[in-house]
Image (cartoon, rainbow, N blue to C red; front, side, top):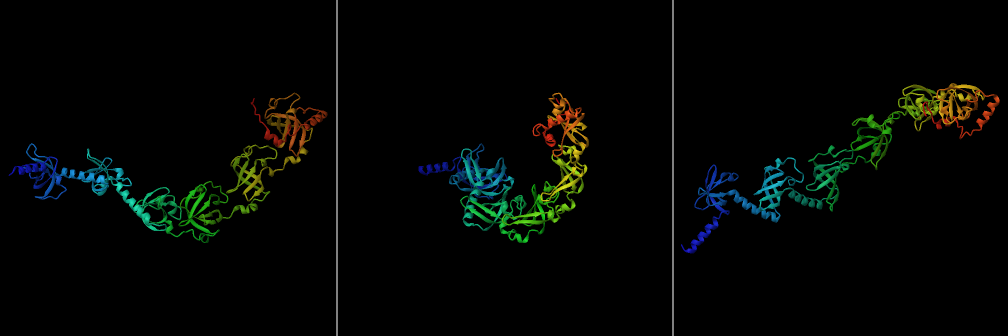
Length: 557
């Protein structure tokens, strides 16, 4: 052999058997633990049988292996099939990454934060990159083969990060563009419910998400999309609007069905009695479904002629079936007004015949207010006694001074207002007006006795017989100057006084304590002095005096 041939042979040997290189070998023997491979070196190499568990191998098969070491302590060649494949695959992965291509891989296991995938080399698939919608159970992906995009390669650490989500998004983007180019308003398409919200549902139209608004799901009332749809449900919808610039599609279901509001006025004329079921209760009324897709509203004011219903839920229940009368129909606004009370006779239509003005009635005091008392005449119908109609003589500040809640009383009907459904009652009208005969009972100069009922800054009110009050002006209390009435009188004191003024029109009796022992001449002068007082300032009418009075109670300073 020539020197050149020898050098070439030596060079070939070094080139083929360089540690770290990939060489070809032939399977010599398959044992339980190892596979012996001949690479043409002076000794064969042993490879763990586990590296061939996914392969169907036979004696004589040619394999590519990585030459890790030419000789170990036992003189054996150290080979690795897996490492040879890894090196080859790593170079392939790096090339695909730079080219922006896709790789196929099999999901091997669930790891912290995502999945481990074999794409020729081990690669990490983060949980956020598995799918467009984050999966709930990662184990369902194990064992499956998918296409992935390589998003990160670290050559030093031999780390690879991949994404399946980006592959899906790219596919959907292409499908979305194709969909937008071919679809038109009015088209009917098939999709799958992808997500539900309070305002509607998103439907997957083969890569394109369309919005199905809750108002376009049904002609009837829907409180939430979940009442009609479930996630994953196949669905046929109609395209209502296509916005190609913003890549938005509006969808509808109810448009595939006949509009039940067409010719609604002929089917539900005003005055017709209809049957329905309550679908919703609100503070102002109740919605009643009279047919699928058609609801009417019973306003709270149309529930009863007489009962005071604050909330419809007090007398109605959800799902309740009832009858009602059509009060009005608005086709444009798709509204029907219904009433329940119209099924019964309005008791106020015959109120005057049942409670004639001037007649006496009996009832129970239902409620007291600052301005009067409400008396129940029958179920749902009250009459009101104004505070001014409680007594002819007493100035009543609050009805509780004369009446108690739950008390049975007798009163007279004095007025009826059918329009506003009001009945006015009076207690004092059952008795004669004592002021009509006042000038026959009290005359100027009469000496009278009474009890101090009320004290004001300008004088004191003395209760005489039959609860008639007289006023002692502060100037008529004593011959001495009086600065404050309460310095001289206290509520409940019994006093004797002279009548110095009787005014039937003003319902006022003027009294004088200091004139109790006056002679006729003295009394005449005092009366003249009393008359000289200006009513608007010094001596006011009895009712006005009560309104302006500043009450003084015993013990006040």
